[in-house]
Image (tube, rainbow over all chains, first blue to last red; front, side, top):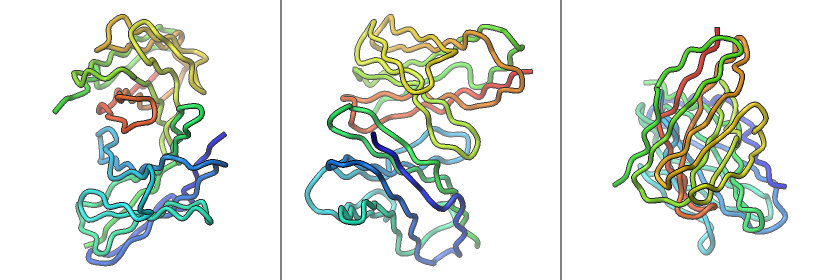
Length: 113
Length: 112
């Protein structure tokens, strides 16, 4: 079965700094990978997804993520964060075999002015 | 673009009460989901449905029933609310079961 680990429950960065949110997954095959963002009092919105091909995928608002199969990782990155990026970020994985989507526990990002 | 509407936004119930949450989508998506989100935790799948009148149990289905009488709507029933229970229930839809999920804003449940 698949699983997702986001080791950092909370990350605090200063506005303008670079960002990396970590995600590791467990799945024996090649997964579909997603990053979602949740703003306060809202549902989740897709930031980016990886199905196949170029392991670096670009998303909305300057976010990108890199699929590293050898490390079972799909870390999210942004070169320069803005205060409006403060939110909870979820990594998710789905498998081809059982069509289920599993979410990590989320990382709360706090951007300090 | 489409939208997913969840009603009510807030739901306060009594212990033992049966409570129903509703979800409507106008994406014309086949698959719909109900997830439970507890504070500081990820999303846990309660039920999903791949088409009208189909129901599939998720990891957390005990204590819940679901109904998909129309393609556009998916309801969830808490069969007996647990005292001090607090959670957010999120409805989502997708074209295929492993494609992008589109979420509603959630229903926040509190049980007194």
